[in-house]
Amino acid sequence: MSAPTAGTSNTGLFSQRDYLAPLPIPTGEKPIDTLNLVWRKNDIFIDIGNYSIGSALMILWPMALLYFGMAFGFLSIAPDFSEIMFVIGGVSTGIPALMLANMLYRPTPLPIRFNRQRREVCVPRKDGEYWIVPWETVTAAAAQSSSVSQAGRNTSGMLFIGFDNPDPHAEEDNKHFYWGFNCGGNEAAMSMWECMRSFMEIGPHALPQTNDFEGSRGSLKGRGIIWGTCCEYAKGIWLHLREGEFFKAAWLFIGIFIFGGPIVFMLQTWKLSPPPAFDHPDIIEWSKPLPPEQWAKRSPELELAIARREAELAAQAG
Image 1 (tube, one colour):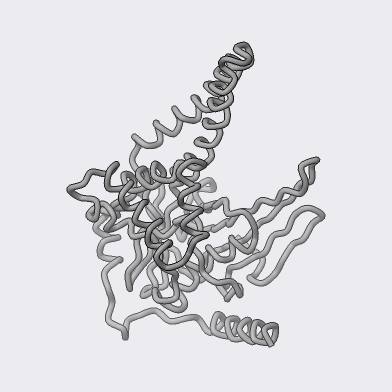
Image 2: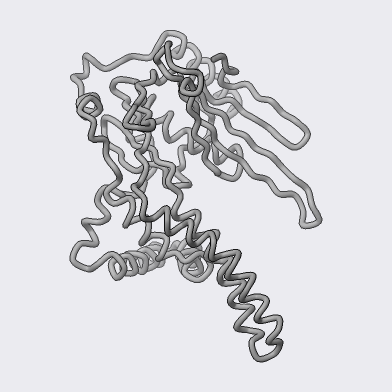
């Protein structure tokens, strides 16, 4: 499958698509894990997941507050209107809540594993199948679209990452696999992509501090998930206040009421601490460290592409 090369863009009247790979050259953005994609990180690999329990709840929670708040607020003033709000709120939030509950009781999907020492990516597929894809063949694109209404201009964006089945004899419906991440805009998409690209091309030290899904359940052991999560959330507010980061502390405090912050963290801890792990013997062996002399190297084409891109970024900065 042919794909536009990294660094090219397609721009329309209300849309824009920036191609980030192949080849995976620097985007110029800092790596930022805005969606908690990094589930597990070490010197060998990172696991990238797309299990958005927190995002679903952060959308559902304010809707429930709005409808049921209006229903209770108008209960004595306008009973008929209050009853309508109860019905609308129950339907508009009840069905998504049932879907969310069903998602919570299903096994957490396996992540995609990026191995920097082998410069390969393990892509889990259905029925226990998996692909081992060369890193430099991975495709990535940041897509952004805008709409204009009476409320103003609304912009949304996604990061798309694609993988090709290395089996040349694969059936047509099993040749390509894509993952999409809702991220808000092209800059945010590039920052998320940089988490993966920087890990593979620079190292784990290039990534920002990420959530420790691996050890957070252990830190709550003995206190219970609910009480322990509330304590950790309150501790986060206190640490921001102590460091003089009043905006971050206020945002966490407001998040309790607007987004159900502690519940979001509790569900993430329940489902992702520890994150799901690969149990296939081949992947366990593939994930083991290699001697430095056996590490895979960049291709000459990628070396040249990165050098050119870094020169362009340096010229823009200058």
